[in-house]
Image (cartoon, rainbow, N blue to C red; front, side):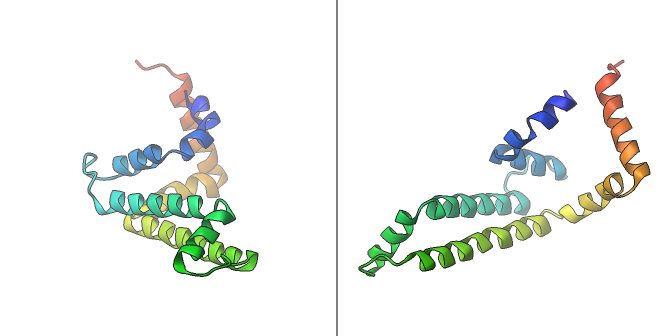
Length: 136
């Protein structure tokens, strides 16, 4: 089970439902889908999808400029500068999610598992124990 989770983790990481479920389960009230944390994640996801669709190809950029009245639809340099600015919005919003959901406390708790040999071995043994020892 655990190895399957690690094997399929790239697939999980692409799904909004995974991250929403993860953050919901880190809250005191696991059913509160209107919490500030989950709302911030939804805002992040909305910005991410908008930027991904917008910056996916240059034709979206040109259509937007033509709609604003710029006859030639801009150039490649303008497209890349605009795309960098939009991707920086994603970066900023990801820190908003991190701070709003208080993920720093969880990172501190997990830190010893990845920063010391003893913590790493303890983490591996615990995972193997959960995987190999059947429920009693």
